[in-house]
Length: 245
Image 1 (spheres, one colour):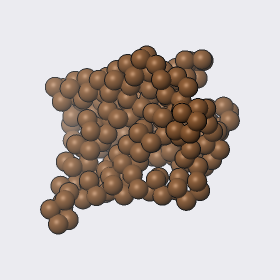
Image 2 (cartoon, rainbow, N blue to C red):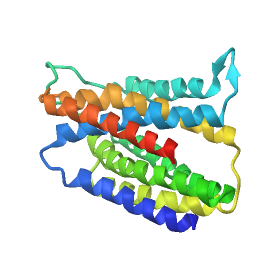
Image 3 (cartoon, rainbow, N blue to C red):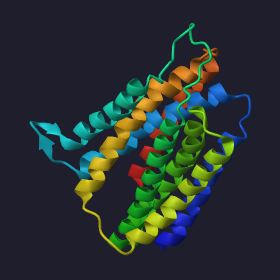
């Protein structure tokens, strides 16, 4: 059952990626939407789950939040070390990151996240059909955003379309692989929580320091701003539905 549900999640990922592929000249609105979705995922999904899975703290600070800061600083240090972050020059003029490996790293994180999504499906069905179904609904909705962001982030950092499509395919297959593993083994909740916190910081940096400036570069439109707010509101709605179920 968990693997069958993960196949639906795979389709959701592919649909999200194909939407990003076919969006055409509306790139800036799409980037604004992607940033909003990523911003929404962090406080409404990743951090609450990380805090629940890993409630331990260091000097009164939850370890999951420390992991989030480490994730934020990781990508910041990488960008500063190679001097690739060039937003805001020429009053939001067009710019190129020219560092494909950052896009690959981000896509790899999304693929790993999708694998954990599938793993969560597998483990939740071990706890019961009701729990598994609730988790599956959330994962299917989130994987649409994962597929969308996998293609968008990869191409944003200068990777070829073919490579982005390959990473999108891997991201789509990831929850199926995770669900298969989740039916066979058990992962300590603490380890999952630390990862989710780390990846939350990673996504927060990409959304605020890279994607939002890129979305407004040359096109500081109200539509882009609306798409960002809409993406965040969408993820809040998904979180509400998930909690009600």
